[in-house]
Image (cartoon, rainbow, N blue to C red; front, side, top):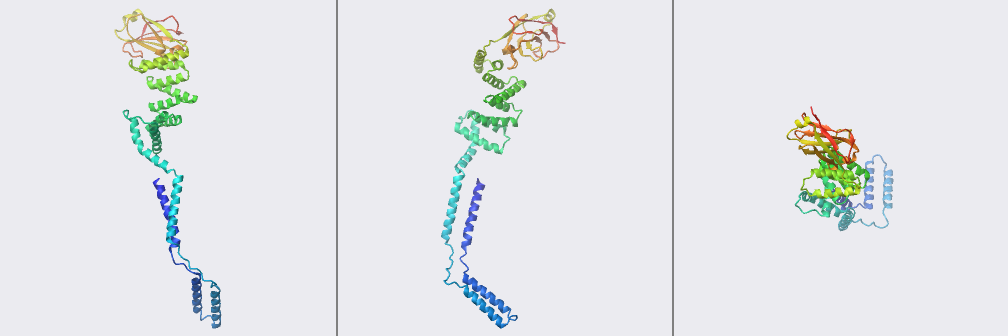
Length: 400
């Protein structure tokens, strides 16, 4: 803004100078003076040519000059030109300045520019308050001001991931979905490996009214869970998105995994349990259970370790990746237990979704879920699942 004002001032000074210079000189040449000067010059030329021109010709030429000078004399005396009064010039300059300033104030939104500069100055203080949990929460007006300040800052520093994320959160608080989506998308593009930026973008997509946005957000959440299946925030967002889109089983699966991960005293457990119950009512389903009875062969019973962990898993019979897993401390056999959707490994693949599968038992000596040398194993054939009769598994062979 300062360069613009300097430019305007320089232009005004230049125009003022153009007004003063032509009228500043009081000497104005009159018509008579010019004619006399011309007459004298011609006489001087005739004197110089005296040797080349006869006296008769010279007198004739002088007479013609006198006659020409006489014809140029006006009948009435010419009014003497007077220089323009300097007061009039000063008033003209003042009028020019007043009009220029008025037009500038009318068309330039100076007040908005002043407010914008104030917002930019307040941005660091507002950001400090946002980051301080003990500080007074920002009002809606202050959040709007902070958003404007962040936009200005991002014009100078477009690679600032944290600023883009904060802009997105402000957009969500103010209910501006477009701003939130664009800001979170930019943050994610700048830092594609940043889990927080990815989840921010996925969250705003799952809350969108556009089905394509919902689909993309869900894919991003599932991708996150494939690499970090204990990510509470990703599970919560996926459950919320699935519930909103009436994918009841996926929502239930995500919430059930969260229950396994959250501490017993966590206050969120009660909310999650109510959400699961509501989803089951909406889906018209009960919690399906698969009963399993585990027995040991004589050789396995003799070589059984004193301490260990029993892993019971269910696969779909095609992939070795388990759909559901349950682990219990090594105890007395035969051992009876049950698996249900709460034991699912992924929220979008529940035990109740399988029609058939393979039940596997792994007795680990050191608690490692991957079979090690000396561990005892047993598994069923490909059988129908979720039947009223328990699946009988004999632990009969040892890992080499």
